[in-house]
Image (cartoon, rainbow, N blue to C red):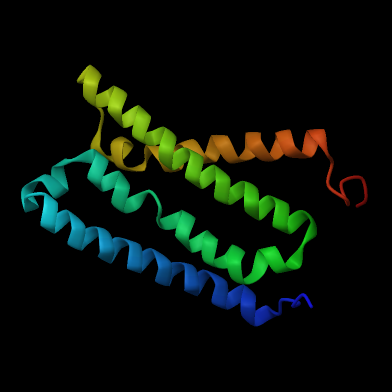
Length: 143
């Protein structure tokens, strides 16, 4: 028997996601302290992106696990696209950081740390448009 989500699940989902993100950051903090010197933590864009990049993924994953996947329909499809977009942008930004590092380009620190989030603002709408173009959502023509 499938459970029906309620309004409490919609509130608890992001809270659960924040808890997942905090666990991720704390786990990375201890691993980074064990493997790298404290000075390299703040100057290395790869480590900064590893710390910051998956936070939105975990927050939205909590919402997806506790609410969106139970709703079904368009909301579940869009939630899955959002999760995949966050993960794709996280991985693609590592490649961009690698190109920046190997090319020895001078890029502002804010762009190095938050460029993947800006990439999400392009990837998600394109992916959602592509998914709705191939198979329109159930209520696309009704307004």
